[in-house]
Image 1: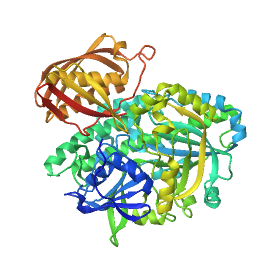
Image 2: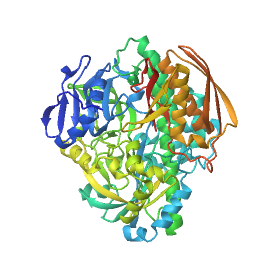
Image 3: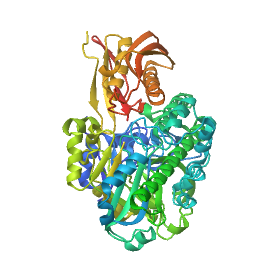
Image 4: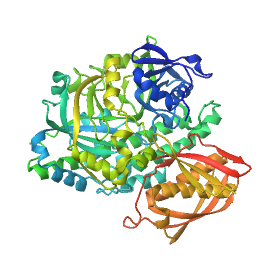
Length: 485
Length: 140
């Protein structure tokens, strides 16, 4: 692929603008969060062109944003944030992505590294046995057609009602684990058929479950509010989404959007940006279906949380309560939300698309749990399996600048195919083992696709967001054990 | 005459293929073959069952995307793998085909990639004097 030819105007060390004049049809400028060093690889992939394309969508306000972990997606870039005015803007399934509410959940424990390291093989084996994972993996829970409707409407709340976890978990989940407005009548039979057997599964690809150890604490006061008290403390990170169900919802509604594009005469630079006015039937139907998929993903992470707690209990012979296995937070990385933001000094209702981006609401925001009112919303940013993950908090600056959004992870630099060509899964596993990371997977060859070399260094990504002020670093954790589908 | 049926290309976030065909029917059949060769070793699939597929859409590009998405659905929801595709009729907005393959057997079929959707991204069916070609990006 050729290098992106356009000009980026430097605003400061971490903000780069694509002027509105770059391309006909841009309604707002583009804004890329990046360090100077990152720009080269961002240009190489033509990603700024995608940022400019998103800026052409009707009703977009302020900027078409790109986080430092931006990489090339279909239509919207991954790592993109775009807010459209509800009154006259559009919603685009491509601005959410196929894996609706792909997201992360973080649990704390009272355990320390030494206690877990001696039992890591046993722990990883128990986790692998208890959490259904892998391609086409089918769940341990059998969901009937009727229950599937309740699950889509209830999300994590449905799971808690069925004995998976507690109310306290819901309080520590974005939207309480249940996005309002979910309407199962907007879901196709195909989506239901793909979704029913996969409920409560981890899946494959870049999804994982990781036992981590805290290596660095940047803000001990804020960390202690989350229950992160010391270096060496063990955490558990769960990364999964809405599985085949979300993909089918996206596929089905892209089709409807195609029709809306011609009906409303919307001019698009890329067919994959298909969209419909938020206030149209097609737009509202997608939002109602997307909410079902978001809830499916939250139910998924809620069920998996329960099995993680069971696995720890089995291995350490103590109850989850004794082990202090409380949920720190659960946040979506792929979602569109109707929110109120200040735009040009006025309150405006907007639909914020976050595709590979994390909500990062500031202290005292009405939508964050009471216990985090003083510190701001926890932001969870996983890296690749060989490096590290970060915990951060949302800021007022993010609220003012990026619609309360920040980065979501590392971002790929090497395609899956290129990674498979240059690395072997077996070598990747051995390399991890040498570095003290135990891995268990159903698909060894595909480990190569997810190797560290295939990703940007998440440390550079979070540093840009921290310096730009759109989230504040709190702690950093490294993997001890990894389960991959 | 184009000899290659398809090739796999690089796409950072996902997987791409370029499918070829001497005619449009062959292009659709090779695109499907490319899809299943991403999923597993096509040589390991036997022809034990067949499925009839019918798609209606607004143009050839979307027919192709929906054809592939239908096959992905059959794989993901019903766990069927296919190796041969007989495109019986193909107009500008309708496709009818019979697909031959078998149920997924985890002991026999090693799954390489969990392809989850065919996208419209950069999709364009091209034709020159040698035949047809199309690039398809899959979400995995």
